Image (cartoon, rainbow, N blue to C red):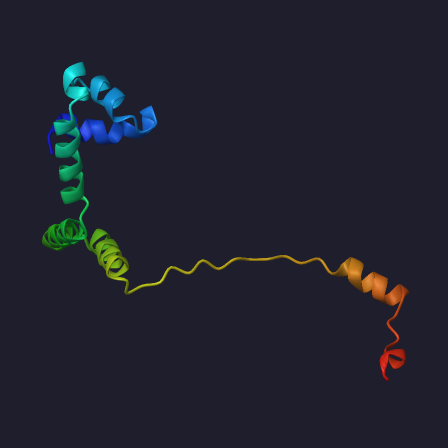
Length: 120
């Protein structure tokens, strides 16, 4: 990807994903910003850069670089990332819920339930 295309992708959110406006902002001409050919070229490069195969290849390359540099901390992070990409790990999203039952207990003490009348 060229530097200008990289800048375009980074600045898209700032312009509410308006590709033509962002293209003009990063230096493309108005005619080029209206060109469908540029949109198609950009879409193709984005699909290639963010394909699952490319992401996996980038992870493996980074992991090899960290192993070569003996950077075990970053290497461990890359192994964890690789496991997530492969679906081997599960993120736990435990939700904590606080329930206040003090009012209910107080009401039950004030008005106890008589279960003997309910038996038929």
